[in-house]
Length: 157
Image 1 (cartoon, rainbow, N blue to C red):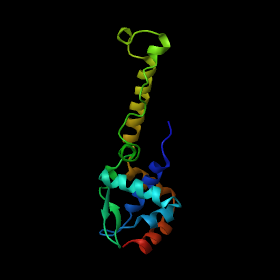
Image 2 (tube, one colour):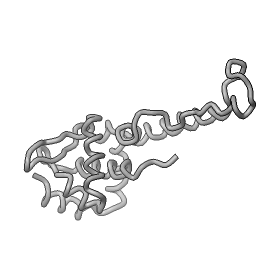
Image 3 (cartoon, rainbow, N blue to C red):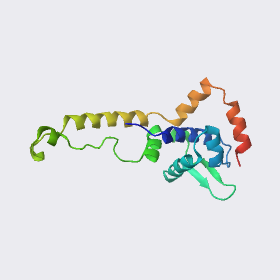
């Protein structure tokens, strides 16, 4: 399994948007330039965050994006679902039937599929336990965010 780069980009977009003054927003071009990522790819991911209800979109020439919900209400799994989709991480191909050359109705549930389901459950539980509020607190405790805040002042509308 490989999680797309859009998931990580989305985390940082949300963290940036959380630092905006009330009533302000930032456009996607400024965000992509700050993060040094593809503007078109970032716009696609921001659109998914808007659709998921995590980001608000302000239309128009001077429009942009702002956070729709508090960081404490956003966990890694919500972002994962927005960017990666709601499908299962592991979709069984039911290869046990071919592996054993048996009829499907006679087989017990596949041990491999059960193990993969357990891994997915663990991944989801872990992602649900990590909020962006926790991430922002750790960033603020360990790094100087003055440059970020100054940049936000120059691009926020």
